[in-house]
Length: 350
Image (cartoon, rainbow, N blue to C red; front, side, top):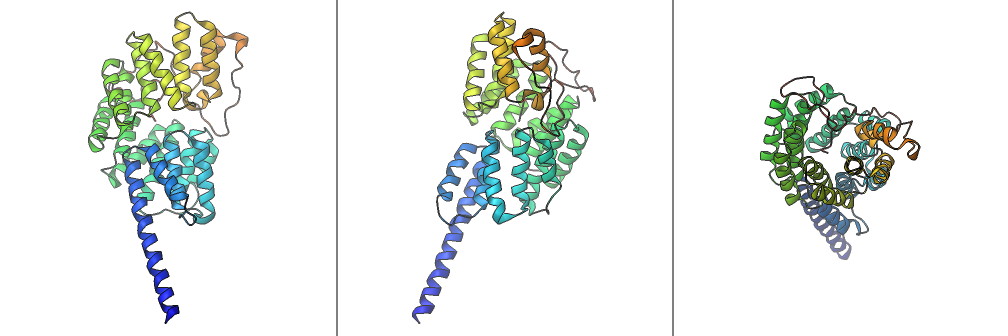
């Protein structure tokens, strides 16, 4: 009798723990869906301090780390979870995202080609990572196809609609880009990334920096730690003639994310155009150290070779598998609206 009571108690306790973990997982996923990555990390850590916490929470924390640019930490968590979860599709999605963030394209492509599909939610995440990989490879047609299929399968997914809009913009179709980007904001009005993308691809990309700043303001209101919005807002403010506020925003962007190569690029250009050559070269060096070339193209390399001569050793090799994005120097002609195939400036909205 006593043995049966003990067994029953263990079963009840296990069920209660399982229910509690399900509740915590649902809260973390909801937090991530709202774009609150730092808060999600905190929730994950509260669970992971428990001895028998499921490996799934390592994957969720890896997802959050990817969203804030902590790619090495994301890989650490995903690899640790891999011992339990194997080729789980959601886990592979985070490895793809982390390796993309580090510019290690060969590794990202490897995890695209391994394992089996998962449930609907995991399949959505995986499709997002696959599409993002093709975007990084500048294969906009394939990326568009991936996101188009994903939108058909997940019509209420703001990020799928948003990334399809980004692809439209990069292919030069501003009308379709506008439709998708505005729809993405409507689908997820509290998502900082959607406002940031709308500001960059709908407005800044085509020279309307005043309206771009308004969207970046909304992104920062939703997530005060979203460094890319500060970076983009800084550049648009500079283009509007406010160097002081521009520099403050770019400095804040770097404080939020020390790996933000684009913010250093922008600071370098501001210094260069103000005649501060030494400061410009220092910022170009920092941009290159943070793999600007792998992520955005050779714009900074060209500026460094022209301006800094022997002061900067520009990289001669990219990480394995990287196909650099071709950038346009400041002042290059903006793409024509509704002109498919016209290549706009380098991508700077995550």
